[in-house]
Length: 273
Ligand code: PAF
Image (cartoon, rainbow, N blue to C red; front, side, top):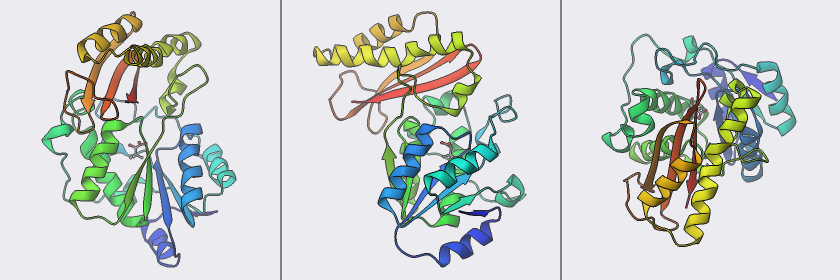
């Protein structure tokens, strides 16, 4: 596995490789969710490139930028074992100039849900993803459905700017009891982990209600809220695949999204229905 720290070196490498190029951008602290993206990329491409970069511009002041879990040696081993061809680990200094043009998310859906709770977050995400896609020029880039709004905005950016990458949405990977995998799960104590299970349980309860033909968004939200009693729920939202809030769930066209705090840790999860 080749390791690059400098964008220009990776660009040189990229020029020399042919065929389908899969790209998996990450912020490190790799878990099975990331691994599933790498495996899918390996299966669908000739070359797989992974990046590890804790992007400062997507963290708000007071968020967990300084505490964000970092396990770079373990991450390198995971990438090596997964058969990744090239790993990109840049610094902020090489990624950002002192002055540069900005990308701003569109009003909808950039400023609702995560965009409302974390103002500026998605501008930082789009900014870094644009840079990473320009450096790696992948044919395919892999993103988890757990960050559903991020996935939507990135797909929208790639289409809007006529970028030559296919954005591949990938399924959420969960622990056996249901907790969606996230690098931030590392912050949870054992007791908080048990509490956090209420989030995925609320989505299971929603699935059961849907199977009994309960399609009212208000009713589904109410039963989810009951399941998450004791958690600090930031929002439950039921939207169509373009992130418009809906009153009646239409199967295969809707997403149920949850954000909740467990102790100090903010977790998100969702269900594509
Ligand atoms: O989903 C993430 O881990 C990050 O937002 C991403 C896409 C790597 C950009 O920093």
